[in-house]
Length: 205
Image (tube, rainbow, N blue to C red; front, side, top):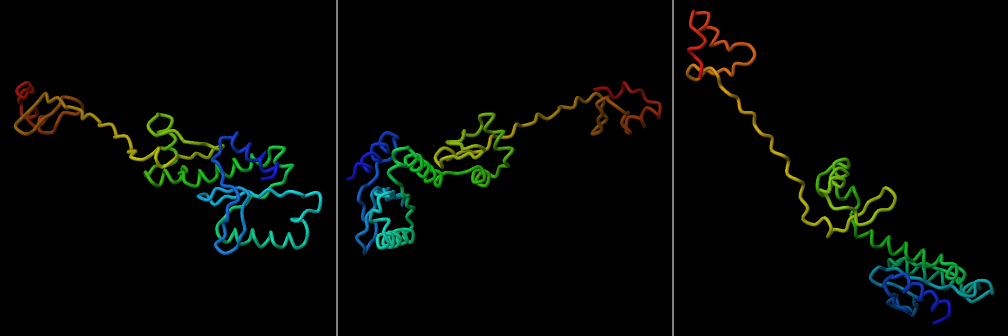
């Protein structure tokens, strides 16, 4: 392992990222290997040395072979990050690796649209539930984009709607099945009795 590769490996460990597999043979027929890779995620890193000294990778035949190698890797579903020594030294390389790892993690996560479709919520209702503590907070957020792990929302159900109490009507006047609460316009049945000369007090409950 070269000094540049050792430096990058130390940066990966210091960043708390998953440990990569080194010198991984990724092709079923060819002997090609990746400097670093995460096979389960199909993510690979190639350290390109000698970029300023007309090294093997910069000469015609070497460039041709590398192009074939990376084309075959792409066809197999690999995502390959090619980095130089200066990018390792400046910290750019570890930044890119960290971002790629985060992208892979988010591929398995649910975004707000996924959550709304799964639980039949509007975006506004989802935001309200989060603010009210009625829905799990996002597992991660980038700008306005929110993400949840499937486990964090597993088994969630919408809050039960509050039951409205039925207003109890107090009956003050009754004649058989006819009733009147004594509010507003006098009930027709009672008005007929009163018009006929009967006292309204006869029908008080």
